[in-house]
Image (cartoon, rainbow, N blue to C red; front, side):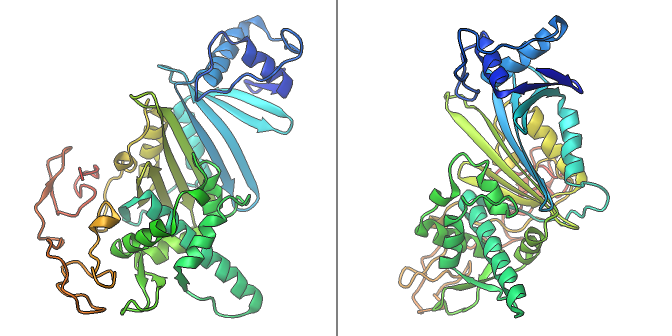
Length: 404
């Protein structure tokens, strides 16, 4: 073992011995001590004055109150994968990073980690906050990322063959990208995100889930059907979906963060965030259980988000992931589930909200209220009391997340 810039640098054998020496029972979040040689393993030497800090770091790794996986890239050249661990009631974050054949263990204050992430994502005055904020299901977010991957693949093929890239896609093509999400390639956002997900993306969605997610993305204004009659299941990007997809295709840095902690029922809850930086934009894809959010962030918003993520002692709720935003122009949010979509009972066509008859077969649609922006009951902000429009996801006065 050696000390380098205040960090402990250990071999794998030394780390195993140190984990076995910790007087704590490993929990479901911690690192399980591995086998060691002999009774106490190969051993390690350490200055007695550093022993309390080292013991505290080992305890955090074996029996943490919560952990995080932090992966990041800069362009297509570098990738780092780190484990963060918190002790109950402690403010410091213990970091574990692989450096060649060794492990580097250090302790960082949350403020230092926030500054590091801000620099990594170049969150400075050149960053433009685009006013995009949208609640989506986890399935819809994964499908949108798969759409971006497919169009990126089409674009690369078009460059090689000197043709104009196609801008349309089918459900089968999206499904193929999701199935390939486990491929080891950190340059593609969906494949990069898969490395921190609690379960493989390839196994997360069925064909029916993908179909429902496409409907949700249509109602959210991110994609549209090319054939208005609905006879051909072909789609294209629409509205802010074009801008978001362009940022994903031209990312200069990206970061994936998964925070895991014990819930009140003793089970482990997970929150996954993907942050993608392009030349002018920074987009957040937040996944928590079945619900999530998609938003464009400015430097102040990013700082508040990361502060909330690194200092909060519990799993983050999806609705609070962008609560530090100052001003948003919300996109109308889709219904909470595919069962509430306005679909024709005869042919299954997705119809516009408020339609009385199907534009595909003419069948009368079930009677239901048609949400119209501006005609909904005002939603009062619990933070500042401002009256917001009925479909608003965020308060226009203070940026707080509004109750659903």
